[in-house]
Length: 126
Length: 146
Image 1: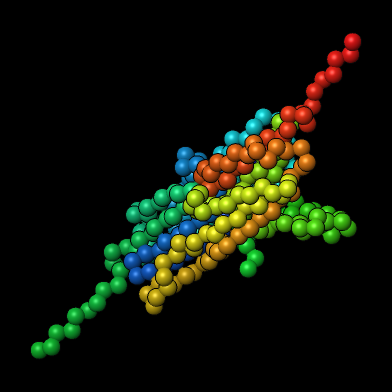
Image 2 (image 1 turned 90 degrees about the vertical axis):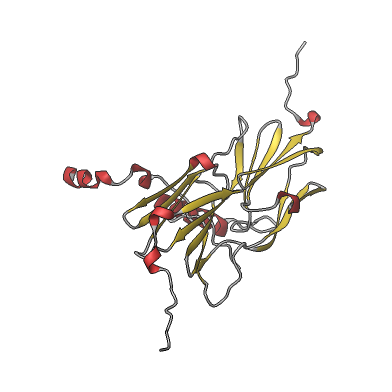
């Protein structure tokens, strides 16, 4: 029992915390993939993007400032954390991911590696 | 279209959802506007002794295009959200499409003691926060015994 828990130690502890699965849109074009994720309430400072090996983890914490003594009467968002994990495929270049956050929407651009970009092969007529 | 947002895949969250669904099926007198869960935007409603606080989780909106109306104790939040996706052509592929797009409208009935003239609305990080003050006369007060 102890051994198994030691073996799992490398797992980030955050994984045990409850989180909501945010809805996403993923579009692919010739030069890369664009991902949009709805993360309402997450300020830029509380967003974390990680790439380990070929897994991309998007994690964000809701940073709402609520007045003192607030008692919830109806709550549809009950867990103040979002998490979603994707596997990247090998033609994508994780070094060149760019991210922007606007009104709670995360936009990620994952370009394809140079060698994987489509190229047109010229046919010379001799 | 059912908005599949905010759908927890966590065990405890799942149990919580199950419990909520059980409660709904046992609740024989639901609100006339239905259970209202699962719509866009997701709403959290709460109150303090001085105010009623509403948080609408509505990311990616143009604040100028959101309409909030308060009429006879019924609060309506409506507007529309553009998908923001590039136009489809033969070179693009849409692999996942879960985010809400289109018109939305959500209605909340407020308690009787709110002051319709004291509403503040703020849009920040994709959350619309509405705060409605309760009437002075309705605030709890201590009565002196002489």
